[in-house]
Image 1 (cartoon, rainbow, N blue to C red):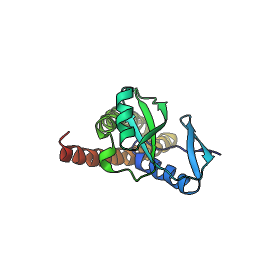
Image 2: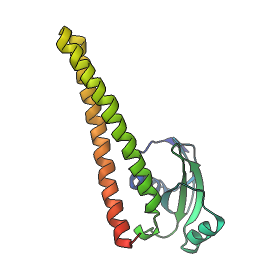
Image 3: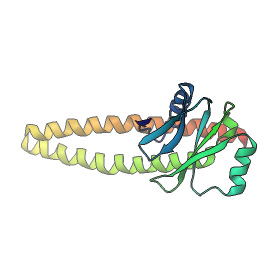
Image 4: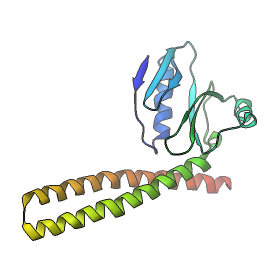
Length: 178
């Protein structure tokens, strides 16, 4: 069975929940290409962990996961310099099993890209089309301003979700002393 599903960068827990629900329905993850998840029927139920690392894991690091009964299912190269590792276990996976350091840095990088986009593109576009609207009073410029505001609201929502997840990760990392 194949299913097309896309998760945002800050929706890692939702992605794991989705994979866990598929497992409860009798499907195990066997493939992922960036947008399509491939599942096979399975009698066993798994708990999934989706990790992000900037560098490829060594055999030693993979063995450390395996010692905790968390086994590699597959890895997928990220579009943003790194790799996603999909792990599975027959036991529930706890917060201490996660690699939040690289995930935190990945989200922070995404926040910086969002900052640049919103400050440069949205602000410049809004200013430019405001000037054109007040100069000519043409309704097309008003429509463009409304579209730019709508885009700004969408990016603000994503930005707030990234900030929220960064705060959660930072709190956990500080608690663990990392």
